[in-house]
Structures are given as structure tokens and as C-alpha cells.
Image (cartoon, rainbow, N blue to C red; front, side, top):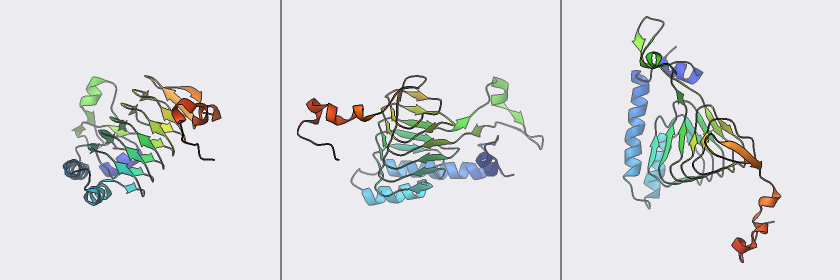
Length: 212
């Protein structure tokens, strides 16, 4: 297997592999190109995003600055909004549904390293070579989710549709759909229900209306 095939299979791979390093260098350069543009240069920004990402739905917006590691392993749905300083270390697949909102400084991480220090430094490969190896676990985010500022989403996590993740949370385990979850480590606080409707907050709703 090539190192990229190992990465995709979720087993140990060498991040220093020339093919993988070339993908990362290209994406890192494209990150810089995107971040150098003015906010109003929408067409140029979207053209760069299409080069970075594995897929992006209509109406999705990245405030920037952005930092993608591979980029090609990230697929984003329609009408998502990403605030300042998004970081996606997408050694493994990152899948994001439609209509999600991300606050500033959200980080999504997929790579995992050995726990023991000596094994983090070097492991022996099948051909006898000593290399620094890691592996990656996918992150999957459903549709209609909202992430507060400074949320960290760890490797292997699945977050269901309709979730709200509180600011500063570190998500280390799956979160079921329609949950409000927060904390470090992030835990489900309660299920979201009709009681959370803005109908019950007339002081904030003011003269606006909830759509029936």
C-alpha cells in the first residue's frame, strides 16, 4: 500500500511521504493565497476554496483566515458559515452537512499519535525503515449544527444533526442529534425541544416572528 492508501485505510502512515507532503504544501500555499485576499474579493476566494476542498456546497462562506492541512479530505455542505480562524487538520476525512454555523477559532482534528514517547519518535515499518508514523480517524458533523467560539473537535467524533456545542468545548465523544452539549470534555447537557423556541423569548424576539 502507498502511504496515502494507508492514510485512507485508517492505519499508520508516514506524514513525511513525498506524495502527502506535496498535497500539504500545495494546500498550505493556497491557505496563504486565500488569507491575503480582501473580504470583498468573493470570486477569487471561492476559486481558491474550490482548489483546497474536496467539496463545497452552494452558499457556504468562510470568513477567514483559514488553515487546512490537506483540504482535499474535507467536504462541506450548503449554506454553512465559518467565522474567523478556522483550523482543519484533515489527515482523515472531515464531512460537514448543510446549514452549519461555526464561531471563531474552531479547530477540527483527525490525526492521532502513539501514546508512548519512544513510539511517537520512531516505529519500524514492514521494510525495516525507522519512521515517525501516525494515523487518522474521521470527523463527521451533521446538518443544522452551531458551534460556539473556541470549540475543539477531536479525532473520530460524530456530531448529529441539529446540535449546539457550547463555546470552549472539547468534543471527544459522539454527540447525538438535537443535543445541547458543552464542557471539557464535552458532555450532553440536554436535548433541544420546542421549549427552546424563540417564541418563549419575547424580550429578545421583539417585533420579529418565528416562521411557521
